[in-house]
Image (cartoon, rainbow, N blue to C red; front, side):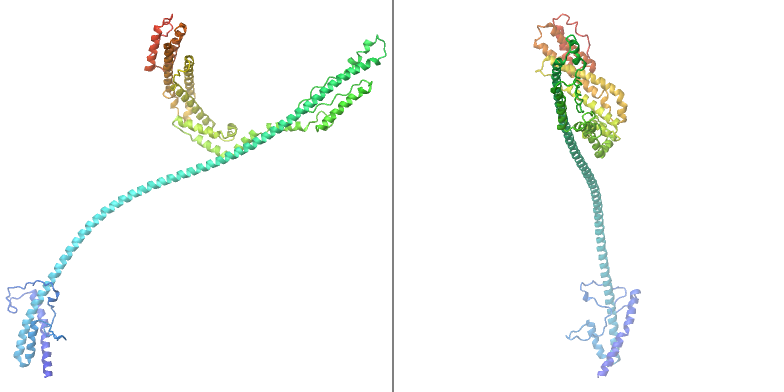
Length: 596
């Protein structure tokens, strides 16, 4: 029984497996070339439409699934479609014979046609689902691509903004670096200037120390020289006093000798007149020696007289004089042969050496010059470079530069003596100084004339005299400037010194305008003096004031080339005063000028 069932089961399995390739082949041919024959009772004109795809994936039939009954699971549930359960019965009926086999074959063909439709519908729905998924994926990718494109454009614009910001930051960085480099250069320059300042300060302190040492040495030398001179003067005074005493003693001795000689003569009176004057006339004492020259010791005393000694006193006087002289020389420390007039004292030699030292190169002034040449060489070379490179377009800058240069050169002991040891540009420096000083004088004169105001506390005569002095000074300054312009204009241009201030439109114009103001102040002061009535009693003084005012106005007119409206008004008032004056010749004394 068991063997029969297993044989029938194997046959059924063989039958179920054998028609599958043919069914798949027919399905592929039906798909490629659909036939007109009905399949499973379906009209050939109708086509199979794809069924709607169920959202549940488990309901889609799998095309390669077998139609044989599945094995039973432990739970007892059957797995498979209802048609499969129907096919279990024919398997059992196979034992009945061929009829059962035919019935089974018929049922198999029916199940194959049904399975074919289910398989086509499943594939179509699966393809449609895949197509829709692909389309949705394409749409999603397109939307993402558009979004990425928009984002890329935004990123590109943002990148441009960042590039612009980067460029701006780069420019700012370069500007900051330039400023930093400028600050660094300025700091370096400041450090260099501080180092130069420190060096100059050290040099100045050293020079001051040397100068103080030289001054002390010179003071000591002068003090020693003065002390030597004072000692020498004291010595001369002592010697002079001794010589005076010696002269007085000689006079006394002469008188005594005259008295002693007369009693010793044993001759008659007739011969007395011949013998009495013999001694005073024939053998007189020599005159006193002149005072010794400065720097030499006094000469020895004269030798004693050849007259024969007549008493003890006559022989002692010269001896006492010699002893006094020798003791005096010993006390003063002057040893040597008495008869040698060429011997010199130490004081005289010291004074001589001091004078020779001053004449030679050991003087304090020459030593200071030598010290400046040795220690301030770099400083002077810097000044030379600055003078050679000086080029200005404004005369005020030249004035400031010359002031600074004079201040720097004032630290030297002797400017010309020190600078002659270097290659000093004397021509350009002198031209700069000349231009600066001339401009400074003219500027000061123009400012003084333009700012002059009438001081009522001063007398009229003093005020008019001061104004006249200013006008005279202005005329002389302009004449000197014209001559200077003719001779130095070319030299100033070669040395790069501005010359516009020397033209008529420069300081000349300012001084002339200031002279017009001086004329106005002068005339107004004259009018004020005339209105005061102080000179009404003195007619000559009244007329003299008018003549002075007119004469000064005419001078200012000739100098400036014209007068302004205020000065003309004052001058017209002065003319009216002149016409109204009652003095004789008041009209005749006024100059007949026409001012415009």
